[in-house]
Image (cartoon, each protein chain N blue to C red):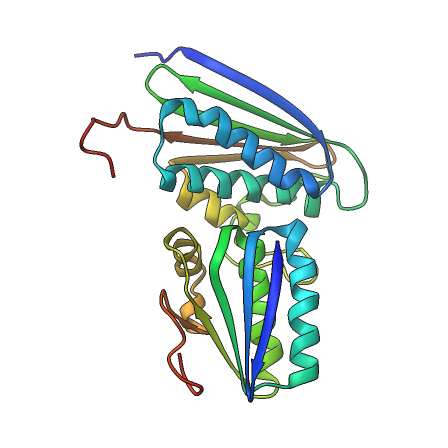
Length: 111
Length: 150
């Protein structure tokens, strides 16, 4: 489990990898929130390309970041979502909170 | 026709969050003898992870104890997984099973039972206050025909 953060201007991209469960979500949350606090982005993109497993703790992680970002009217994007993770995101209705994509990030203002 | 147990295993782990990953991986390894698809394995791993997390976050929130996992393979290629705790129990099981309902602090989504229900074929939850909770889930792994694999 790891998080690699990259910032370009107003966009922060967090590349998540490994397994996201209740055990690992806490540390991921702390790393993402530290980046949000220092960069104050207008958009956060969570990249799930290298996530091998996710349960509903990952949904909690996404919902929590959504709540945080909406305080500053910042956007949340979820990109490179593998099929098995897409399934749980659809079940949770994540597309109502964030732009949900199986592909790459397209530009700075949208996904 | 009554199905006969072909194989089974049991695993008892203490309530530590590092065991979430161990428990789901152990069950997945056990189920792999049925030659499931990657999707089926992912569904089972996710459901087990939810049940074990519930034990840690809810059942033993302020105590320590064990999580008891049992899995059975029946002759009709159905796998049955039982996850039991001796924790606080659930006051109102049907309320707890409603999507988005949670008593968990912080960032719990309230989706654990919804995930188990939709990723498995059947889900049964029985609970008794101060005695504990038993989650029973089944999933049929259809026999794959060669050349027709998904």
